Length: 344
Ligand code: TXA
Ligand code: MG
Image 1 (spheres, protein in one colour):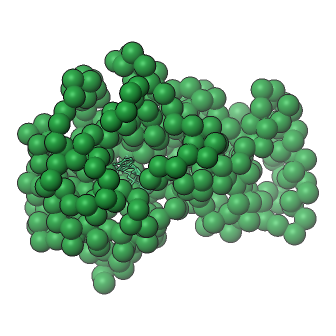
Image 2: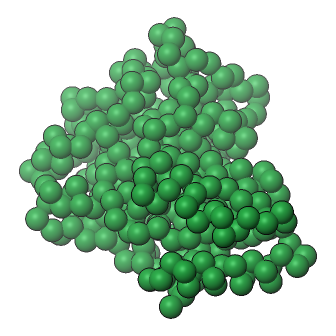
């Protein structure tokens, strides 16, 4: 199959894409977080194509995207008071809510669960596409399953080129990590995946919110809570600890060992790069831990770049788990196969 890439800023291309969706096809499109791979959420044959294109296991449910509150009754069967508060505060935006499912959403979307994940993205292209298609759009990230999510069209093309008909090119995404997934079917609400909306900002609306224990590395069984995810081909070694100097020293020590016989990459904030200035190492600066929004924006692209450079290992540093830093930590932790190397 030939994959066509078209400019998302032209109205005619939105119409073209909406037409593909209405006919049961797939379209990759930008959101404010990462690129999504969309299909008509009410069409089970169309949604099945998403699983096939991504190589995604059918037990992993998909987020349904809406463009207006009027679309909600076709996705969810009930909206609790707390959901309204959250939607008013954070939609459109990177917050996905788990609610009870409507009958109009086929089981394949939710992997047989009675709950459904729903969000309204804050991206003009995504919103225009959903409005034009006049159906809610089911869309996971537009990458091969388990690989880092796509923040640029090149990433979508690298993973899904030849497997899907159309990509709407809207440039690089703004946030760079996926939406926060918040389960409202339990009390208190649980963050199943930290993301673009921080725990702290949710606490401004909710009296209590807990973070899924899987994020801290304990076993937790819930769809999508895999131990290894968002992972490049290279093996990721994630270092953390209270004393930055000691952590850096441990990284340098490990680097020295690994360099014998391996190509090693180092992915750290700019302020720590100088510790690794060495010709046999592939270094990549991740903005700065003082501007974590930028780190989030660059993270997945940096992992892909290191893979493209052919490194066997990526040594990286755990960020503080505050604000969007929690989502950055989570992605690095999952990329490492849930193994944090604690240095004290
Ligand atoms: O930012 C995002 O959320 C992007 C853009 C495209 O919207 N989408 C995205 O989708 O990251 P995906 O499929 O890569 O991740 C969706 C996550 C998975 O971890 C999945 O297990 C979880 O949401 N999820 C979906 N439905 C669920 C449900 N009913 N209950 C619990 N978790 C659910
Ligand atoms: Mg994904």
